[in-house]
Amino acid sequence: MIEQAADAKRIVVKVGTSTLAHQTGLLNIQRMERLVKVLSDLKNAGKEIILVSSGAIGVGAGKIGLKERPADIPVRQACAAIGQCELMYCYDKYFSEYNHTVAQVLMTRDIIDCENRKTHVVNTLMNLLHFGIIPIVNENDTVSTEEIEFGDNDTLSAIVGSLCQTDLLVILTDVDGVFTKNPRVYDDAELISQIEEVNDGVKALAGGEGSHLGTGGMVTKLSAAQIGLDEGFPTVIMKGSSPEALYRLFDGEAIGTFIGGKKGATK
Ligand SMILES: Nc1ncnc2c1ncn2[C@@H]1O[C@H](COP(=O)(O)OP(=O)(O)O)[C@@H](O)[C@H]1O
Ligand SMILES: N[C@@H](CCC(=O)OP(=O)(O)O)C(=O)O
Image: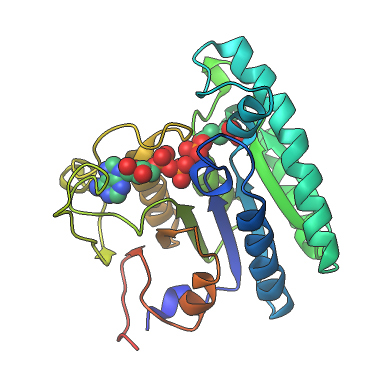
C-alpha cells in the first residue's frame, strides 16, 4: 500500500486538457461527468478536494472551431475566456447533481512573491474548504503575461498544494504515469512505479511537448512533483481516462507513478 497516498485527507487533483477534451478539442462530457462523480464521492467519504482544471484554452479553441491550440497569445487568451466559462458551467452543473458547491479561483504567478496577494489567496482557499466548497483553480489566462504566468497548470497545481498544505497532489493525464521514455513514441517504454528524487536524470526521461492540446508534457509534471517534495507532500501521476482508478489509489493500490520519499508495503 502506498500509505501516504491512501491516507491523504486534503488532496489537490490536477486534470489536464488531454483528459478533459476529445481530440477535436470539444469537451469530453462523459469523462468530466465520471470525474465529478468520483470526486464527489471521495468528498462524501471525508476527503477535502481542490481541483486544478486545465482545458480553458483547448475547449475554447474547440468551441470556435480551431483545430489546434492557437499559438497567437491574444487568440489563446480569447479561447481561454470562452473555454473557462464552459468548464465552470459544466463543473457547476455536474457537482450540483451530487449536492456539492464549487467556486472558481483564477490565479497569476505574482501571488508567489507578493505576500499580500498570497495571503488573500490562502485565506480564500481555506475559507472555501472550511465551508465544504470544492475550489476549482485555473490560471487567469486573460490577464497572464510572461512576467506573471505559471505557463502550465502542473506548476500551478503544486503551488496550490503548497498554499493549502495539501497531503497529496494527484496529476491526471493521458498516460499511465512516468515512463522510462515517451510512451507515445517508444513501444518499449516502461512505467516507473516510484520516484524518490526528481533529479536531472529523471527529468531527462521526459521527452517532447506532449499532446496537441496540452502544455508542457511530462517535464512540467516532474517539476511539479519536485515542488511537492520540497514542500513535503507526495505526487501521484496517473491516467485520467478512468477516474474510478482514484478509488483504487485511495484503497491503497499502487497506481501510476508515486513520487515521494517513503513507500509502504504494497497491497
Ligand atoms: N517519459 C515520459 N513518460 C510519460 N509521458 C511522457 C514522457 N515523456 C513525454 N511524455 C508525454 O507527456 C504527455 C502528457 O503531457 P500533456 O500532453 O501536457 O498532458 P496534460 O494535458 O495531461 O497536461 C504524454 O502524452 C506523453 O506523450
Ligand atoms: N490555463 C490553461 C492550462 C494550460 C495547461 O497547462 O494545460 P495542460 O497541459 O493540459 O494541463 C488552460 O486552462 O487551458
